[in-house]
Image (tube, rainbow, N blue to C red; front, side):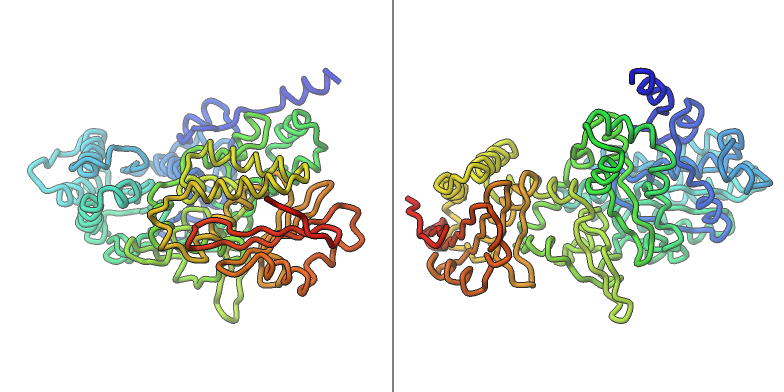
Length: 538
């Protein structure tokens, strides 16, 4: 047994966690999933592209790979598809703007970052430093001078173009507007400098429709929803099983699972992202690599933080977050173009990776969106909980643990006490503004988070109860009413036959009617029936 484990460990390659440099990855023998056949297709069929993908999906590594290719570093591609696909290996002048990092919340943060990149490019290729020019004009001059000196057209790579906007759009709106205007003048240069350009590639999380690279720079081809490039970032099922089997086996051993069980769990947790109507599903590489590294199933993507502006926007527009489970329909135009002043939050949720494509109705040209996987679903609820439940994350989890323990042990009174305590903590000043949706959003978050520990079904258009919770010993059927009566809720459970599917079940069944009062901003009544008898719940 020990010998088998040693063999497995010897076969495990170093995982590229935090590695965004293709050169470092290849020279230091980190595992690389070969995407170079797709990259070759990209660079031989077009000249200017934009690719949107959620954070932590390998965009920076992709840009670094393109940089290595255009710099003619053939040795780095040894053993990869591109080694044989490319015959010339020309060394082009390359300027790469890496906007993933930088202090963009200061007045000149974006300007200084772009200026530094141009200055570095001028130094590297021994070009005149046109410091008296405005930055856009200096950029144009650098492209022209590099073309003139090398005799070759220039490659322009822009990684995470939207970071300066995303970092300022919530807390620094004036600075955000300034960044947008500066983008307009700066990158419009590329349109005028087309004769000096060989290849242009932009990446970002979101596609801001009012940023100039999508209006003035209209030669950019958006491949974000192109089926041909749906697997350009992320890990497909075949890539997972062909490249990571030693890691899968090691994880399965640690978690005491069979290989098949481990694969199913990985799929449930990290797979499910789909970026085109008929494209290939992909895993989140960051979460996948962390799971292998820590040898456990965790919520790693969310550890890098959910954007505060996203939570604030959901609250500001009083969005009905129950829509996330019922699936959201949207057109291609709706999910591709995001505007900060757009009250529709669906484009941002899709582009940020909180929602993904589940299906496509070709006749109606409509996409169905939902959570990609369990990591996103449950972690997103945990991120929303502090704002909606008026608490911090740790307290929110403690509430869920208490409700979970009560449900596991059939303690109905404690369930009521915990639910009552959650609502009692909400700000009294907002009570008059409360409507049925606010109550339902809170209930939704609680039971969605509870779904991490027990089986939970939430209300759907099919007409089942508002919530059904199942454990090994108990089945809880909840029906919620607002400004009505708990008796009416119980009556609906009986009349609709919500308990019928469990008629032959040996588990104890609780039918629970809850009435919420908007005036009192709390649960007013809770009635429970089991075995046909009404229980007394204080």
